[in-house]
Length: 169
Length: 100
Image 1: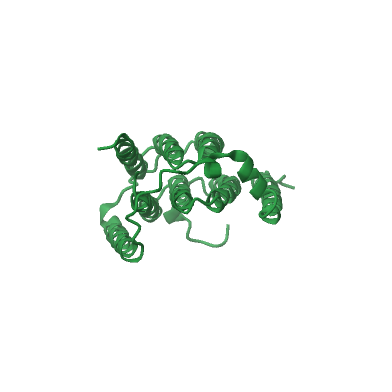
Image 2 (image 1 turned 135 degrees about the vertical axis):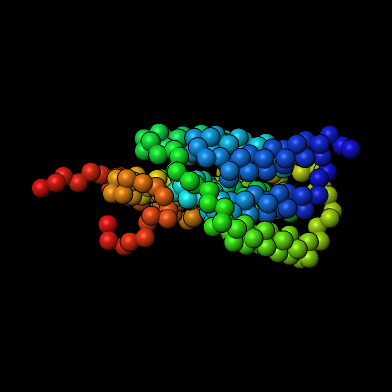
């Protein structure tokens, strides 16, 4: 068995395990930490897929910024746990529907895509070079790039407006 | 090399787990984390296809998704804080009236 496949299987098991841990942990802080580990695992997978720049922005943006924001809000609210979070009787339809969707999507994936070919080993510079990505981002994707700046501005203003305490007159 | 199918299946599994999280959890914060998990699963599929077709467009889309996720988290967490202020709870089952 090639080394790369072993690495992939270990990473996949870690990703699924941490996702499951997030799903079942009662305490929101533990869930957030499981999710950080999940994002880190997926980042390593991006490295396996010859996308180093995406991998590092995954670590900084997701595992860094977004999850820190999450942890900050969890600790600010002080509402980490809910009493009787899991009521199994109510959960049954959700679990059945989820498994149904899973079976359906896996079936469709195997039905529709016949991509059993391995990824070609010659990726070369075409994917890993950040300058090529930057050139594409600032030529073909210039308009979406500028639109995201407006999106971020709107999100920032929105977050401030939503959390602002109104003065009681 | 690893077949691209494996990545797509893993992405589907992670997506379904995120969806299960949205369906079964009552803690609003964890519901929100599950949405992040789903976005991440979509990103994994994008990067896998980008690798398969040796094309950078997929990776650039991942950047845009990350930006949208960051904006979504900022606004969503602000909403959660506002909801907690008015209801003293982040239980999704208790959010059943329109008037605040």
